[in-house]
Image (cartoon, rainbow, N blue to C red; front, top):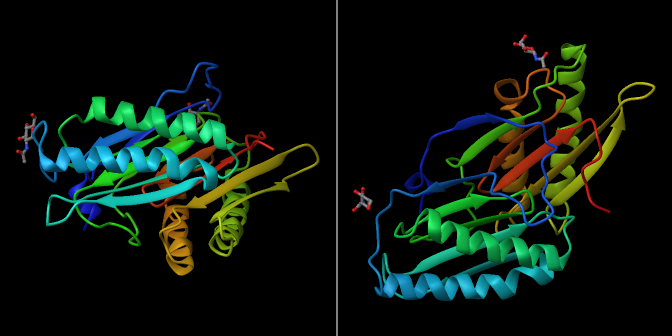
Length: 243
Ligand SMILES: *[C@@H]1O[C@H](CO)[C@@H](O)[C@H](O)[C@H]1NC(C)=O
Ligand SMILES: *[C@@H]1O[C@H](CO)[C@@H](O)[C@H](O)[C@H]1NC(C)=O
């Protein structure tokens, strides 16, 4: 498979990282694939619907689910969903179910699509993408505020995230969070996560590639995220991880 079937545009946009509504969250971003369309009531649509209902109940208990349904090339639907490692099973359930209905509205007849929320990632495609790093679907977010000493800050952030990348790749949940003191009053908070279809080695590789995007994404910024189809990281100077 290739996630190269999905859109390859890298989109940049900005955030203050403060927006969280009480009544469900808006998607952060999505791509509809250009791998082809299906028609209403086709075998592919039926298989996709089965994948979606499997993911809806497989994902919440562990925060990760994958499923494939169908036989034959281009008739089989493959899907996965991943909740952020610190969200509860019930928030995970809400996110996955919202993601699956939203993505069907945004990409109604595309055989593949991917959508991200703060709390979850949801992806499906008509070819087997499991266990492969998605090098195509990626976007950045950053805080508009600049730090006062970018050189030191960038260095410490990169080092910190690399440590969290190693921690996530060695964790069965492929998720890590942490914090470091930057000065007397400043603390840097971070999060790294991979989809659990990846091997530990590929999780680390995926995160290291994402961390390599820091200069393009978040140079001297107080917060940032590089978010992909197989892994993502986030750092902020305020706590954002749920306990
Ligand atoms: C899929 O549908 C879209 C919009 O309906 C159309 O623009 C596009 O050309 C179609 N793609 C293929 C591969 O048929
Ligand atoms: C941050 O720095 C950039 C580049 O120097 C500048 O354009 C921008 O206005 C600064 N942002 C704030 C919020 O001061």
